[in-house]
Length: 85
Ligand SMILES: [Zn+2]
Image (cartoon, rainbow, N blue to C red):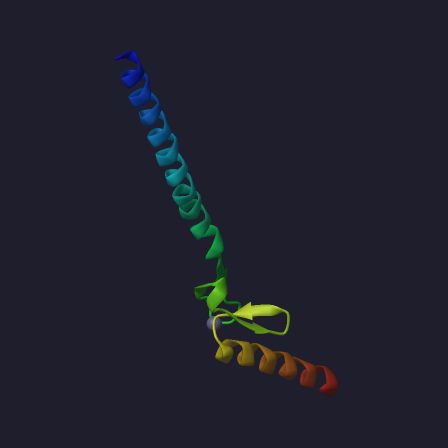
């Protein structure tokens, strides 16, 4: 009789340990997801976008290839101004 109680007690302990193990990684995933989607502000149009959706132009990141192109065009225009002066 006592052996049966001890067996069920151990079984409950093992089930609890397994349940706790199964819960832990899920909690970590939830904590990690906001850090993965880092938001960046586009220096051209000011739109906030996820880092994974961004487009690299030069050494900066833009919301789209269009904004990256606009930024490089603006740089080229300022260079022209320097030549004229
Ligand atoms: Zn933009």
